[in-house]
Length: 116
Length: 112
Image 1 (cartoon, each protein chain N blue to C red):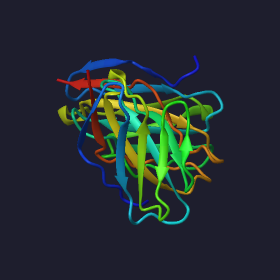
Image 2 (image 1 turned 90 degrees about the horizontal axis):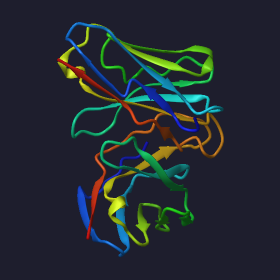
Image 3 (image 1 turned 120 degrees about the horizontal axis):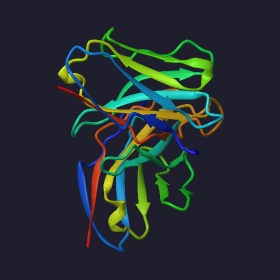
């Protein structure tokens, strides 16, 4: 499709389980971002990938969170041993890596994670 | 990146212009002003950005003061579907990608 695609759209899991969230960015966008948004809160930056450079992981809240991006395209955000406070909407965005439009991020619809 | 200040909420009558202010008094010369909005239960949507000149696109107009310390996003004829949280973001350099920092934004409610 033409937009950023995320899956699953909804995920309910039990505390302690691992989850994987997937993001398929817009073709040609080499920058990819993960944010999360807890209920009624603003967006919290998690991690961003730019081309083949080392990712900026400065926003990851703990070592239970990790992300990878294979082949410069699809990204997977993994949360190990989920906790109830991990419940949030996880948003992925992509953009161009250089040029004047790098601040124009295209967001997906998000993956809503509920940890019981 | 410079900090921004926005009112937490605003109302606007349907069909009227919505003027959303943003203060960014510590902005530096090569920082751009970006506006995004987030409609309930959706991902944020890019609206417009500018450096120092006023900008207009099919969604909105961006008016930046001459000293660049504040800006106003204008939705010329607000509709009910424009009800959303509007984020003003100041971002250092558009030359290379980096994270955007979203603040609390302004909840705009368009009233029928």
